[in-house]
Figure 1 (cartoon, rainbow, N blue to C red):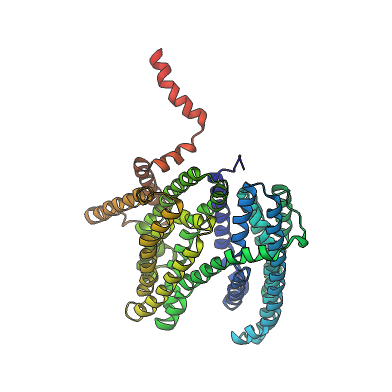
Figure 2 (cartoon, rainbow, N blue to C red; figure 1 turned 90 degrees about the vertical axis):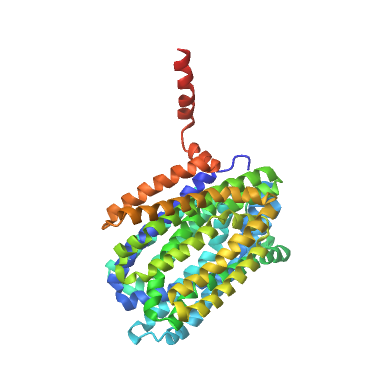
Length: 517
C-alpha cells in the first residue's frame, strides 16, 4: 500500500465510465423505442426498474467488503482478507440463487398485476426470467468488483465496465436489427454479465493474488460482522428510495400524471449532477479505510480536507451552471411546455449543492464504520421528505414536492453532517467550513453578477441553440474556475498537479537564469 494509485486518475476513470454510460443511454434509448414501440419500451423499463430493487438483497455487504478488504490489505492480513472475501462470496452465491428463484416465481403474478396485454405476456415473463438470472449472476461478481475497488484499481475496473457497456450496446443493436424485438432484448444484458464476471475474476487474480476461492473459509462470525456493517447501508438505500423514488408516486397521486413527466425532467438532470460528483468522490472510501487502519491520522485529515475542497468546487460549479442555464437547456431540449421544471430544477440543484459538496464526509463515515449515524440521519430526512411533500403537493404542486425534498436535505447537510463528520475526523469545524465556503462564495458572486447583467443589458437572452449555450457555459465555467483558484488553496494545488513537473521547473528557473545573465 506504499504506492497507492492516484485518486485523481481514479476519479477521472470513473467520470470516463460515467460519460460512456450517459452517451450510450442517450443514443440507445430512442433506438430501442423505435424498434419496440412505446408499449414494448414501457415493459422493458418497468421490468428493469423492478429487477433493480433486487440490489437490496445484498444487505449492504458490498460496502462492507470494500471497507474490510482495504483495511486488511493495509495490514497485510491475508487470513482475514480471505475470510471476508470467501464469506461474502458464499453469501452472494446464495443471494444470487434466491434472486433467480424469485424471478421465476413472480414473473407471471407481475404480468397479471401490471395487466400486460396477451401479445406481450410471454415476452414479459421471459424478460423477468432472463434479467433475474443476470442479476443473480451479478451478485457473486460484485464480490470481485469490491475487492478490486478496495485495492483502488479503479482504472482497470472502469476499462472493463466500459468494454462491457459497449458489448451490451452492440449486442442490443444486433438483436433489434435482427428483428427479435422484445423477446430478445434481455439476452445482451445476460451475455454482458457473464463476460464481466470472467473479467472481474481475472482482474482479481492479478490485483489480489493472495485471494483464493475456498468456501470452507466462510465463517459465521465474519458473516455477522459484514451483515452488521451492511445493515446500516441497507437502511441508507431504503431511505434513498424514499427520498428519491417516491416523489413520482406522490405527484401522480396528488397532482397529476402529466406533472410526473415534468418533474422527471428536472430530476433526471439533478441525477446526472449527483452521478458526476458521487463517481468522482467514490474513490475516497478505500483510501480512508486504509489510512485509518494504518493509524495515519494526519494524512487522513489532510486527504479529507483536500477532497472536501474539490467536491465543493465540482458540486458548486455544476450547480451554478444549472442555475444560470438550466432554463435555457430545458427549453432547447424538451420545449417550453416543461417550463414548470425550471423552478423544480433550481430548488433541487441548490439543495444538492449543499449535499454533494460534502460527499467526502459520507465516504469517511463508511471507512470508519460510523455510517450508522448517517443511516439514522438519512432515514429522518427521508421521512421528513415524504411528509413535507404530501403536505405541500396539494397547494404548490410539483414545486411543493421539490421543496419537500430540499428543506430536510439542507437542514441535515447544513446543521448535522458538518458537526458529526468534523468530530469523527478529529478536525476543527472552522477548517471544515473553510474548505467549502470559497466555492459557495463564488457561486453567490456570479449569480449576483448574472442577475445584474440580465437586468441592465438583457444578458444571455439570445441563446437559441446548443452551440451558443455551450459557449456561454464554457465562458462561465472559465470565470468560475479562475475565481476559485484565487480563493481556494486546495483547488489551486489540484490545478498545479495537472501541470507537468518539468514545465514547472522550467518556469521557475527561467526568470532566475535570465536575471543572472
